[in-house]
Length: 377
Image 1 (cartoon, rainbow, N blue to C red):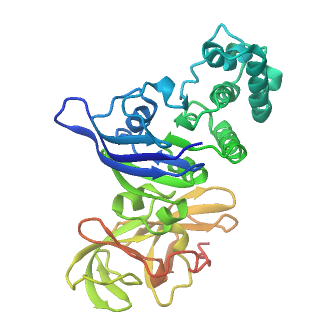
Image 2 (cartoon, rainbow, N blue to C red):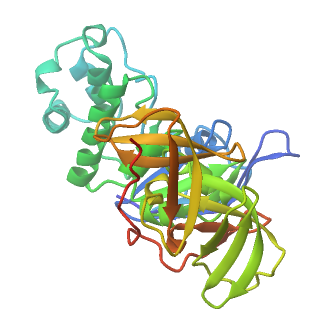
Image 3 (tube, rainbow, N blue to C red):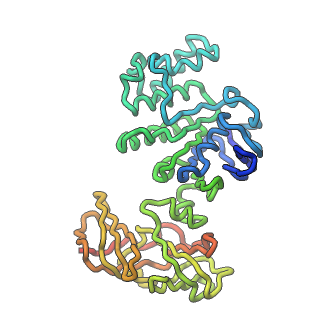
């Protein structure tokens, strides 16, 4: 396997406007890196540049110790798994998996050994004599992955491989890909628009927007310490609650913020550079809202919507100023639409973003907050 290094990578189709602008990214040996972001952010373009299907307008791309800017795809040591499977319909599963090796001039014994090894890993050895039309969507995707495995590449590239599968099959195949990564110790770059998929699969999450990397780090880093408002709103389901406010007090322990909704909150964040009167945005995760928060802030409103998830529910509380606050509740509790409810959050729970959308560093990230949930019966 190989590390991947991107230095000031640019992509422009017309020579005037950059689709990708100065991308810097390092992916270590054996790392599972997920590129995630909204449609049009540049993640698929970046993947196609990695595999050689798109030219590089500027910068340096290295796979292992080799600069591959001008190398054709066949010489980069990569294997790509596409969203559409791209299987040959007239060939059996065995022949689909063996085709690339046959073209490369491998002998029959080596081809057979590698195909059967990959089929055993993916639990598709009983499907080798079937045609693609005789397979389910999940089975076809495993064949496409198997075709990549037999090549024994330096780098695996996945382009939204689960988007054509139904919800249950997406979860199952996602688990299989995670197991495959552990078995092979492979370096993987994986593109998705689904942030839940990204958080559950990746060692490193790379959040992109408008041709730029907004933040790269572990799932926990991005969730607990989002670098800016875009990452805060994109990572996490449901989205982080966001409130406009103004700094009303500054001290060594953090900030006091007067929210536009009327609440006064205290946030345990790095207050260096902050001034009274600064416009800020305050963020709060759904699971950090509860009954216990005596040193924090209270929010009162009326229950408007409840999303039942079984073991938990998401309660949408409409505050007195009309703004919604979503909180995570116990799925076993009775919740009545229209009921009045007052909840609170501890000062350690709040995120603060300056007028430019940049996050002020939290002093106590993590699960040290109240786990108590509101009574909403």
